[in-house]
Image (cartoon, rainbow, N blue to C red):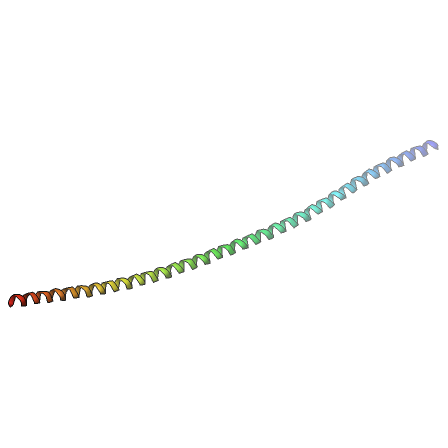
Length: 125
């Protein structure tokens, strides 16, 4: 009877040891599962932050591109307007000097004709 009790006690102790070992592994597995879940949560959070930052940067790049194109168009329009104004001004100056040159040429021709007339009148006398 004593041997049976001893064997039974040893068997119970071994069983308890196996149960404790199993519980330890179960606890470790549970902790690993929790760690895995925490990791997956952190991973999703990081992915969301990355996507949000990427979206923000794309938005900023698009805004910068639009600002650049707007400014480029403004500069192009200003340049075109200044060029047109300059051409117009140059044309007015050119017309002014052509008119003045024609007036001077006319005055010169009249003066030459008048001098020729005076010369002829002088020679006739």
